[in-house]
Structures are given as C-alpha cells and as structure tokens.
Image 1 (cartoon, rainbow, N blue to C red):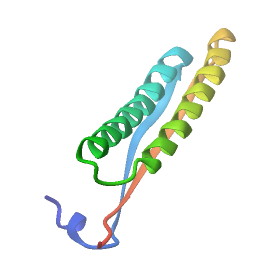
Image 2: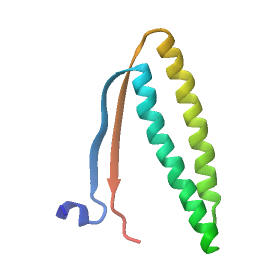
Image 3: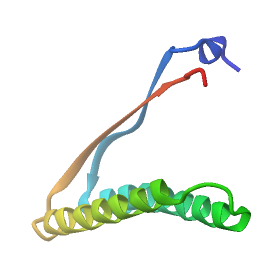
Image 4: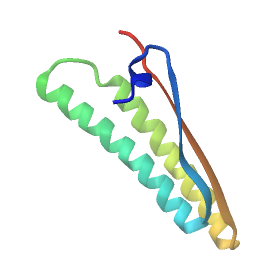
Length: 100
C-alpha cells in the first residue's frame, strides 16, 4: 500500500470519469454509480436491522436523495438524447484519511 495513503489528512485525488459520451451511455454510466450507492445503503439498512444495532436514518435519507438524483439524471439525459447531444462528464474523487 502506498505510504501516502497511511498519513492522516493526506488528500488523494483520482479522476474517476473524464470524457465525452453519447447521452445514452452517459446515463448508463451515471445511473450505475447511483444504483451502486443505493444498493450499498440498502445493505447497510439490512445489516443494521438484522443485528438490531444502530440507526438506519442516515442510509434512508441517502437513498431518498440518491433516488431524486437518479430521476434528475434520467430526465436531463433523456432530453439530451432526444436532441442528439453528447455529454461531457468530469468526476473527480477526493479521498482524505481521517483519524477516528
């Protein structure tokens, strides 16, 4: 593992998505990411309920927000697709290791 990652408060930056796509492909890419996050939170809720340990409120709120985001993406990119537009996506990821 890179030593830089082990240092606290070190910011790591990655470019997850960087490109221009047909609107349909852009929609598939972005909705796949959103759906993975929704699945993650659904698993968190399931785990919390199975163990009866913890609160599901955070995950429930995130799912609600992610569903709204997915609907907005679908709507905007469907319009772009109908008009024959391409979509440029820039998706940087910043990771900071924090001490508990």
